[in-house]
Length: 66
Image (cartoon, rainbow, N blue to C red; front, side):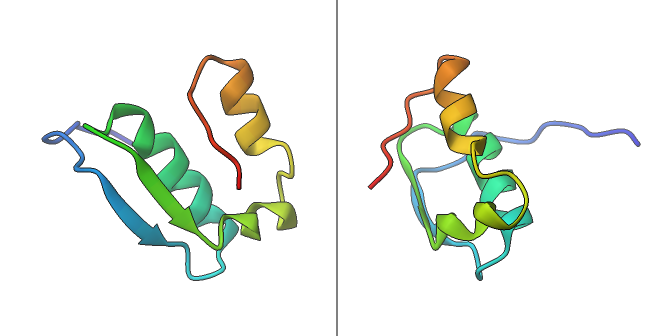
């Protein structure tokens, strides 16, 4: 697999569609966004990786869990 980065990700609200994979992918993508990314239905991560956002915080990411 070869992944090429694109342009800057814009600040936005994204809907995870209740899918843990989408919620986590958006969380990683948000690390390079030009502003905050709000992920709705982010609790979908509980299906596979409950501590995902906590671990992002521990790695230095600014995560506001509401």
